[in-house]
Amino acid sequence: MTIKNRRNALRDYYSTDFDVQVLSRVIEFSSFSTREFGFVSLSGKFFRNIAFENPKALQDFLIDRCPTDAYIGALYDNPPSRKTPIHTLEWKGHELVFDIDLTDYDAVRKFVCDCTGANQVCVRCWQLINISISLIDETMRRDFGMNELVWLFSGRRGVHGWVRDPETVNLDRDQRQSIIDYLSVVKGEDETARVQDRKLLKYEFRKRTEFTIFKYALKDIRRKDLVEMGISASAATKIVSQLKHQEGKVDENLIRRFNKNLASANKYDEVIRRWAPRIDHKVTIDLRRLLRMPTSIHGKTGRVARILDLNTIFEFNPEDEPSIFGDINKETE
Ligand SMILES: [Zn+2]
Image 1: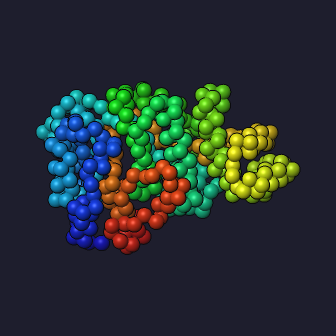
Image 2: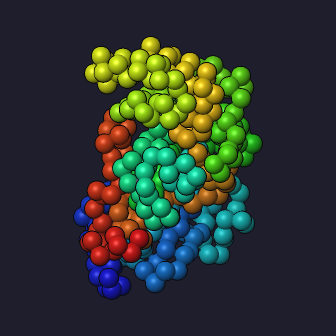
Image 3: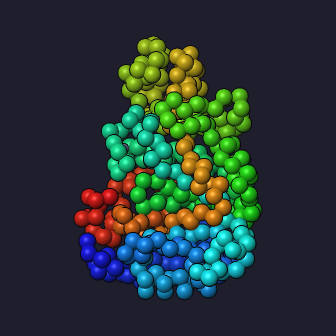
């Protein structure tokens, strides 16, 4: 696609479909003018240290300049600019954010689908992302008392979670790291990543993790899959017939049975390892991080980084998301 066509597609999108008011779901508008923004220009140049007096000025900029990518950063005591870049300013806060990307699941994706390499994604491996969203969202609400969480499709291979509750804005690096530690069932990134000792996890959180993961693991499971997991033939038969009897509904009873069978087959850690959330902690603890702007365009795919509806996330298929650049660009992701 030529630069001219890309510019037209972006201008079209930002002038008709983009509503800058939607950003109030992730950031506070009263401090808008001292917020850092960053962009990638049509010619591929990355620039940051930009601020806007108000949301309208930002929307005008998007329509006028048609950047291929747009990002939101932290808050400062004064508006960032070329003359006053962020390292010369006093940091005043950043929302708590989570970055979950299929890149971090490469070691375990092979258990759920045939995708290979960095560019492939399908509805099956996307379930790994969905499990993480459900678990983190519920835990932030219940265990941390947060109310305003927004989950965003990144436009490519992952999602971002934004916690908009005001008390998160001033958290320092260590506090953010301790939230990550609380949420980390798996330590490490490769296939042999260590599963956190069950005794070290908070009871409620551990139960929730097991329920979320096992519920997904049991969905559509066949007897032979259970036997392959090391569960005895008779126990596998019982689970499958119970599932059939309950018309596929996975309830607490079934979870308890599955948990016990996994433990006696010594496969508990393996199943948890496959499906547990993998959060890119570097993003969460980086206080000056630029994160893709909600409902902006992902420059490589032309897809909208749209806000996800948690009630229907398990139906979301990233491959079905339209590209404002048309189909040509999809092939070159
Ligand atoms: Zn896949």
